[in-house]
Amino acid sequence: MASVDDEGEVINESDFIVDDYIIGEIEDDESDEETNYFDTLCAICDNGGVLICCEGKCNRSFHPTFEDGNESACPSLRYTNAELEAMRNIEFYCKNCEHKQHQCFICGELGSSDESTGAQVFRCLNGACRHFYHPHCVAELLHNGNEAAAEELERKIVAGEQFECPLHKCHVCKELEVKSDHDLQFAICRRCPKAYHRMCLPREIACEQRAWEGLIPDRIVIYCMEHEMDEDLGTPDDQSLGWWKEQLLGSVDVDAVHGYYWSPNF
Ligand SMILES: [Zn+2]
Ligand SMILES: [Zn+2]
Ligand SMILES: [Zn+2]
Ligand SMILES: [Zn+2]
Ligand SMILES: [Zn+2]
Ligand SMILES: [Zn+2]
Image (cartoon, rainbow, N blue to C red; front, side):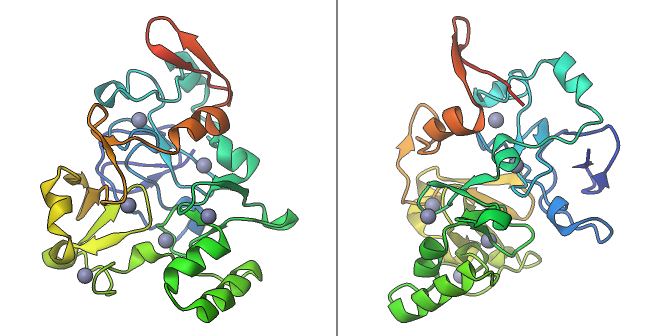
């Protein structure tokens, strides 16, 4: 099982848990492009800590046990320590990657990502990007207002042409990220494909407790103004949470002690 250690190196042995949120994107020339990048924040709760990484296309990470997600009240994958121990030498695939069903990062709908049987959602070509899109949704966003160009891009994506999603250019100035330049580092929304340079970040995002430093190296994590914040959660009331319950985690039972019990049917 490949994972990452504190130095950002990929480990292929038994150490499959990431301790602390230290790593951003990792490049390892020797291994397959799709297994090189892991998210250092939990896909369920957006917090860091001890995470298990999916070996599929999604690059996502999850709090594996309830204890690991305790700080952020994360439902987690609800593995027991014994189950985790038994999985040490097995590659972990999340439900979405197992079933090749991924969520469009724009409209939130699930679609097949199985290109052998006709995919509905396609992944951004950027190796560090873990997001899938409907061709129509992403083409419309990339060519905002230019219908002809959007339609052409949509056709190309359906035909298999690669595309880069809007997360890789600043929403304001349309320029690229420069990690070595403080002002040109990116603030990335966790809920939609929107990124800003530090210097281009709208004031209201910085002022309304929607931005976090230090969760990801050289980047700021934000929830942009599109998403209504839930004061109890401290994050937007996630439109994908209902989806997580049913599609990602499978059956849900009520646990009298903790509220929800998320059955780990992997
Ligand atoms: Zn979590
Ligand atoms: Zn996955
Ligand atoms: Zn969509
Ligand atoms: Zn992307
Ligand atoms: Zn900018
Ligand atoms: Zn957003």
